[in-house]
Length: 235
Ligand SMILES: NC(=O)c1ccc[n+]([C@@H]2O[C@H](COP(=O)([O-])OP(=O)(O)OC[C@H]3O[C@@H](n4cnc5c(N)ncnc54)[C@H](OP(=O)(O)O)[C@@H]3O)[C@@H](O)[C@H]2O)c1
Image 1 (tube, protein in one colour):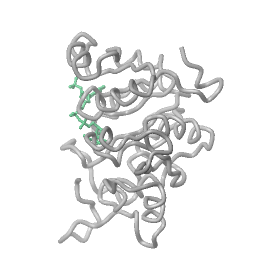
Image 2 (tube, rainbow, N blue to C red):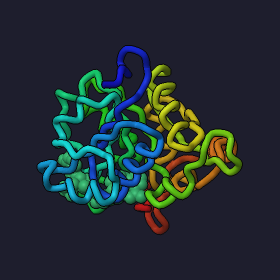
Image 3 (tube, rainbow, N blue to C red):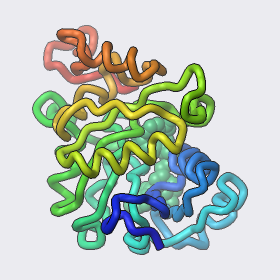
Image 4 (cartoon, rainbow, N blue to C red):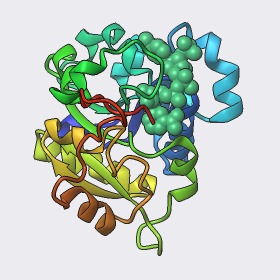
């Protein structure tokens, strides 16, 4: 088993969510030689054939078993974060790849302007070491754009988190997955690459992404046309 907690090295990636994004991520992680555990909302048997067909080599597990992984990636609908295995994720390195407003999840959009979605997840996951990342790239692009280190055309991947060591650890995984990590700031700055910002879906190099995020007034939630309450568009 990996020793992320001991040495900041990720060997086993756990993914909560066996949908379009979770399985694309699983394929990418397998290609990067990680051991991959994947859970859906039910029994592992229920996703076994889909995982075998779409992410051969990944291991279907029950959600509570994800604590066996060195890092847990949240790839389930934002509206389900209330059902996360909170106790098992305490002290765990967790990557929030979820997007509020992406899916018809019944989220209260009014909260968007006051608190980043990852801060809401952090409030739910007391004690988890949360990093927001991987959310602003579509599942098709995740695979299409992944390139080896040093290849021309590598794209940037924004990250936000409060612990520099955890950002380093997740950054190393993102590098291995095929993207150049771009640290945006503390967890609250995850709002700068949520849906409705210019960075969301930008498919930009690290340099371009950084410039996009740093431009005054950019990387902020774009008010929905015709609305005055600042609620973002779903993307
Ligand atoms: N699609 C993209 O391109 C993309 C890109 C970046 C980020 N994201 C984010 O990734 C998340 C998933 O998107 P998606 O497109 O993959 O959705 P999706 O295809 O609908 O898949 C959602 C998955 O989440 C699982 N799930 C639901 N509740 C769960 C729970 N309590 N525990 C474990 N798994 C649970 C579902 O399992 P069951 O089928 O067993 O219910 C399903 O496998 C969203 O937050 C989205 O914003 C998506």
